[in-house]
Image (tube, rainbow over all chains, first blue to last red; front, side, top):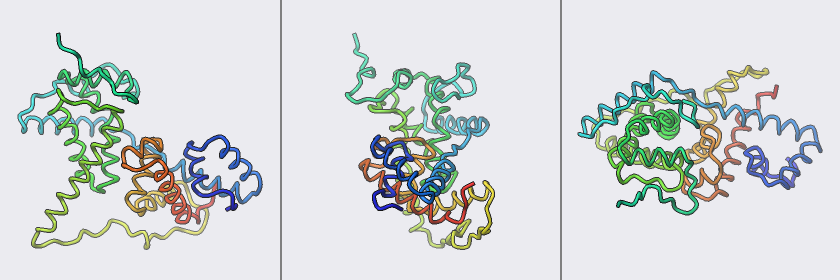
Length: 96
Length: 200
């Protein structure tokens, strides 16, 4: 790795947390040497692969909601009354 | 006339209009708003708890406890800054408590046998050729699992849960600079572990 860029610089850039000046430095660093570009590509591949979110399973969610209601009953709490599956309006934000 | 205290927001609050509405309604005992919040956050919170506890049932137990407490104390419940951050912080605290309780129980058990780990990073063999995406993904998951806990959680909070440095800093109780350091160390380690994979 070039002496003027640290791992932290590269990761800040990947994370979208780098100021513009640093982004420009990383861009120059990538152009300066094909090995730099190869390393950047490898880091980017790793970075993107780690961002896979677990999908929500409606059956599991319903089962866990029922469990939660049972626990509420055991503790003598009033039940919320509405089940997640009974909500007709889609949730803004999460799209669930 | 009663003043609606739930609508008073502290300075710097990042609560969205939707979150404020949920909180207001849940404080009034609205089960539909509570169910909607559950539906939105339950899966990701379980994933986060699983990252900490490495035990799926324990993760569900911890997250359900957080939701139970919210309902139990709904009339006084007041997340001040961000609902999402509040929930992650609550799950983290509950998971730490769970781990302490479990450690205490295990210490007092007369006969206890260590559960063998389901995988051994050292024993993992990866072919030298260019590998398929699935193999890369599996190796990546194993490498992430082998990271020290704080580093692993920091990395996953960013990559899987989509938090910013500032948000992770709040959840983990550290500075954003530490978050940046932890991420850099995590990536450096993962790069070494996955160096044999060629970029396609």
